[in-house]
Image 1: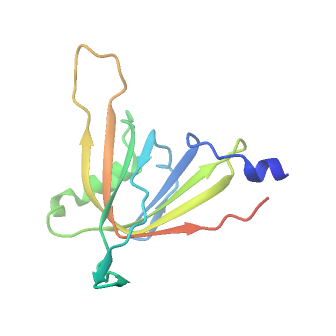
Image 2: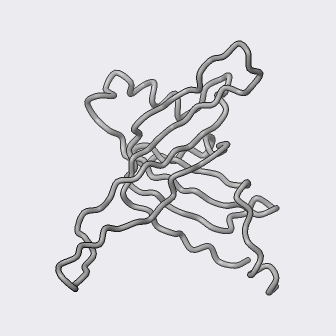
Length: 151
C-alpha cells in the first residue's frame, strides 16, 4: 500500500470530459495530448511588501487527437454554432482525469468557464504517413484540483 502512495503516476492514460452549455459530452473523451494545465498568479510589490495581484491570468488549454472519420459530438456542436462563431462564446467546463490500469480516476483537474479559442488541423502532406491531428484550444482562468478518494 505504501509503495502505491509513493509511486509516481503515469501521464499517458487519461481522459477529458468536455461540457458545452452545461451538457456533458461522454463520447469525446480520448485525446492524444493535453497541455496547458497550469495554476499561476501575479505578485505585486510595493517597497518591501508583496501582495497577490488582483488580475486573474488567462491561460490556454490545448487538446490534441486524431481526426475521426465520422466526426465527433464536439465537432457537430461547433458546426451548428459556426454561423455565430464571432457573435457569442459557449462556456465549457473540462474535467481531465489521470486513469490507473483499470481505467479508474487517480487524479483530476477541473477547468471551469473555458471558451474555445481555436480549432486547428495539422498540415496535409503527401510525403508523410501520419495520422491527421486536430488541436482544440480553450482560453481559461480557473483550474481546480478535484480530490479522488483512495480506493
